[in-house]
Image (tube, rainbow, N blue to C red; front, side, top):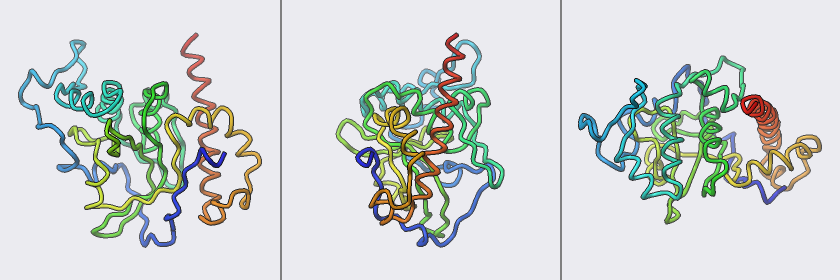
Length: 255
């Protein structure tokens, strides 16, 4: 099991000096509004480059951004479609205090709203069967100006040359796929747990039931060293519950 988990030794949660929760304020609202990373110039108002479906949907299609994704990433067409769905079809909604319900991709699509982990699971669900060089990451984001920190879940992928990018949904400015080195100017990311894209399904199907049943504080040396065994166990328990529900929903939809 240990080789499936990449736990970063630098995480020391006690070093985070301030933790806040924000009602209906997403990462995109805090850090990307008017900024983010724009690999291509804004196409609007040049209409041929921004198109809308003939069915009257208000979900735009940015030809330049799609071409950039295809050129930059393996499976770029699918990455573009997955990112566009989060950015333009799903609205950010914070959960009530002391609530941490992980929606399935089916539930997120139905409600058209969710928070960070919901957007990541939806993004992953559209790419789960593809060979993607990426990771789902749980951790903390700390603003460099004010040291405000908050728990976060994000998706990280690498381009064709191995350059890492963070994928952040909920921004409607085509600026949410960002080179990691650009983020260092305004924030610090402190990972707690990383799961490789191509191992998530295997972890859920084969390893997670035994892991959550037999997990002990001193079971793994990294858990003792990191002093985050409880956090990791909670993540896996919630993943198990969410994916179990998701599989039932998928079977019902296929009937």
